[in-house]
Image (cartoon, rainbow, N blue to C red; front, top):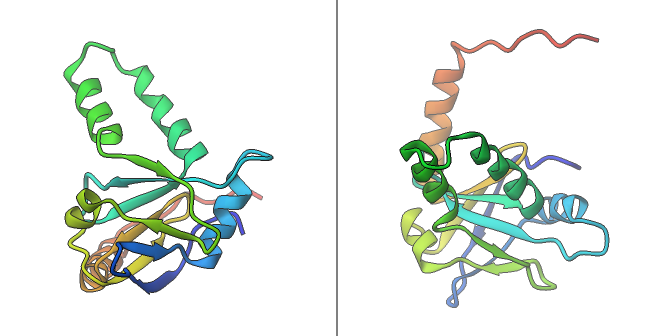
Length: 152
């Protein structure tokens, strides 16, 4: 599996730890550089009240696009700040657990129950009721979206 997909429900323990779903850990292992431990970068979404999780290699590669903006522009400063300022890289323990930083858990309104949602190249961590609302919104909006044809 090379993509994050599906919903996965879990719980935060008393220490703020949560286990990354096994299919997501497999993707992180596959994306890790050879010989390196799989790591994940967590950051607050700047669009939704959730946490984004990226394989570290993908997070840093995506951030390279910021270099195309004028380094002294307000847009570059704002996007760089939004992307990196509250991001944190971590390596799951041998049970696949990570500790969610308080800042991120607060941003996503997480208490005990959480939902991991696969988003192809990254995943999101939601409060379950908020995830259900977002799922409904996305499905409704997606009715008006078409994809370009894929050539064979």
